[in-house]
Length: 391
Ligand SMILES: Nc1ncnc2c1ncn2[C@@H]1O[C@H](COP(=O)(O)OP(=O)(O)OP(=O)(O)O)[C@@H](O)[C@H]1O
Image (tube, rainbow, N blue to C red; front, side, top):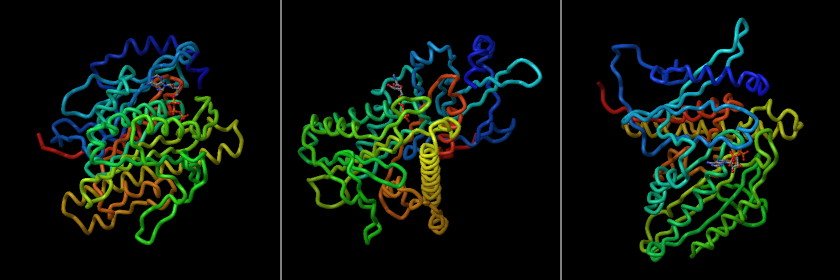
C-alpha cells in the first residue's frame, strides 16, 4: 500500500487541493447525520467521560519519504462535537485512484501544533483536582504504534508531578506512586527493576498488586526521578512504524491521601500509556511470538473498550433512576489483566466517583491512514455524550 500511496502522492495532493472544505464529506462513521427536518437532539460532552484526539506532527522521516498528510480537523464550532476528516486514496479498479473521505466526531481535538501544556490544561488539570478530592481520575492514551502515546503520557506525567507537588497543598496531603507494566497476562513493577508482581483479588473484591512497591514522595524531583526510572524499564520492541515501540500497557498510579481528614478514600490519578494497536499484517514478518503478542494486545484493548462502554451505559441508567437495568449491565472487568488492575475505574458497583479521559493519538501521514481510521472509530465508540435539548 505504501508504494501505491507514494506513486500517487502528486495526484493525491491535487485531489486534496480540489476538495471544497465547506461541503462536509460523506459520513461513514457511527454517528449518522439526521435526515432533513428531523428533530435534532443536541448533545453535550459528558465531563465524566471525555474522548479527545491528538494529531501528532508529521515527523521528518514521513516528510522525507514523501507521504502527504491525510488527517484534517474541521474548524471548531461551538456547542458541537469536533470533527476530523480523513482522506484516503482508493485504487479504483476501472479508472484513476479517487479520494475516499471519512469523518469522526470527538469531544475535543488537538491538532499537530497543540502543546502538551495545552492538552494538560484542557484534560488533566480537572482529573487532578478531582483526585485531590477523593475521586478516581484516569487518562488513557490509545492509538496505533508510533502515534505519540508515550510522548504524550510522559509529558503529562511530568506536568502532573509539578502540580501535585505544590508545596502549599502538600501540608495536607501525602502522595504515593506505583508504576506497573502489563504485558500479556503478566504484570511487572517498573519501580523495582521490572520485578514480576501478581494481580490478585482480596476477600472484599478489591484488586491488589501483590509485590509492587508504593513509594511515598515528598518532593517534586523525587517524583520526576521515579517517573524517569520507570521509563527505562518499559518493555519495547521495534515495529514497522516505531523502532522503540511499547509492547505493554504502562499504568502510573498516583494516590493522594488527605491527612487533614481520616474519613474517605484516597484519591487516585491513573495515567495509562496503552500498548500500540498494530494490525496483524504489520507484524507478520516478526514471527509467531510477535503475532501472539499483537493478538493479546488487541484483545486487551477490545476488553477495555467493552468496560468503558459498559461503565458509561451503567452511569446512564443510574442518571435515569433505572437501578434494575443498571445492575444488569455486564462490564467484563475480569477478562483482562489490564482491566482487573483498573477495576476501580470500571466497577459499576464500586461506588467510587470516576472521571475518565481517553486521548486517541493519531499519526497524520497517509501511510497510516487505515490505522488512523481504526483509532478514531474506536475513540468514537467510547463517546457517551449527554443529550441536552431538542431544537
Ligand atoms: N506531539 C509530538 N511532537 C513531536 N514529536 C512527537 C509527538 N508525538 C510523538 N512524537 C514523536 O513520534 C515518535 C513516536 O512517538 P511515541 O514513541 O510516543 O509513539 P507511541 O504511540 O508511544 O508508539 P508505540 O505504541 O509504538 O510505543 C517519537 O519519535 C516521538 O518523539
